[in-house]
Length: 189
Length: 189
Image (cartoon, rainbow over the protein chains, first blue to last red):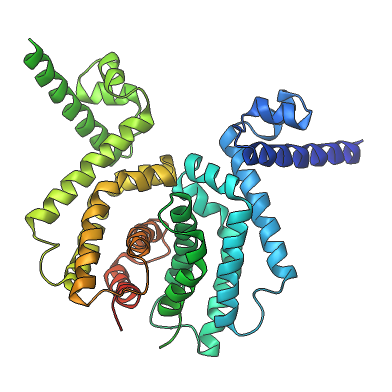
């Protein structure tokens, strides 16, 4: 019975998260009521998983980040020389942000800066390892703390996505702009 | 009568904003009720100015930013060669973030990333003029869009303050870390 209950809970959870992301993609408010209707579940069931809309939004974002990280592993984005991997990772991250544009918009509007940063804790661990490997290989600079380089990676990639969303930076210009910025900020001279 | 009413409204507004910042500095929640009590005003009066706690927090942050901008004008931070002014401005901005640490913490926890960025619209106009002057003087790079350099200035200064707050970067390391990052990201080679 417990196994069955767990299976139902997991299926409901996935249905809730997928329904919330579909609503966001249609630019519809992902309220608990709307998500319940979209997922074909009762509001009580959705509330049992997510007492607030913010917690639901964070879970949707975590799911998207996990999927993006899995795709990066699959595509071996982080392998090979660290400086080249960093370039690939920046572009890969931007594509992730584009693919989940509606979700990124919702988190930018509804989650605090701190909450958004916390969502990236796991993903940034891989970037930290990449930066540390690059230091050993001699391509990544050692005169700035690695935690600072990590922070720069996070704020610059998100900053670029936010600027595109605000209409201040052309989407087409982003890869070159980020590549140049990363080269000058991360690589040894 | 109208003049008298306007004077009362302005005095109340200032009392509300000052009370909210005092509460934040004591790490007390700046709820509408708490602010009313601290300012010696009725809740109805506070609600009349700020229907929600978020709008109140945004107004407190705007006031702090205006005060910081006025202090920067007073200290002629933006004058002289643009590259030197940019250095001074980074340190000046960090001091502003430190001086209003409790407020910065509250905005990081309670305002969305988009709302926080909007608060800085006015202040960033001065930074844009500085960057443009630096391009004319030949010190600031021209191979990246000025709007992108402006975004980098914003996200890196706030990123540094957020990292210090999260305990990932030592306060004492920040000036040198920012100066090095700005040099490599903003200046001509």
